[in-house]
Amino acid sequence: MPLKLTAEEIALAAARAASDKRGSGIVVLDLRQISVITDYFVIVDAGTEVQVRAIAEAIQEALVERGVTTLRREGWEDARWVLLDYGDAVVHVFRTEEREYYDLERLWGDAPRLVLDEEETGLVLEERRDGRP
Image 1: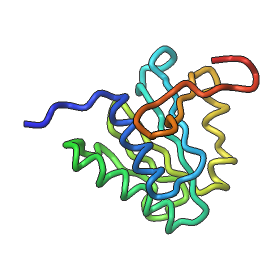
Image 2: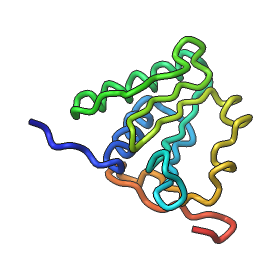
Image 3: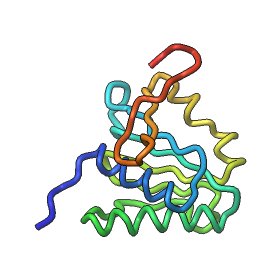
């Protein structure tokens, strides 16, 4: 029986899979101290609907391989904003225009922002220009 992944491990696996499919602007918001809905948001974008679906599919496959099933998937048909719900981690794969419009990073601006480290082996706190963590 596979070990249950932590929310951070799910977020990391999703971010890596998105990176492997050339997702843009990959960021993980750590919501543990500011929200009860989930622990992490993984946010990524792509230029076309085809790329959005490819990234979302790669994330699902990567997590299934690690024993994690998607609880809910929304937005697949239009592929402008695909949401993959894993309970303690929620993945948002946007088309670039939709990401800019909805701007989840601004809405959740108090959340610490994590990014993949250079070797893509872990998540590190992103250095922000405004001096906030």
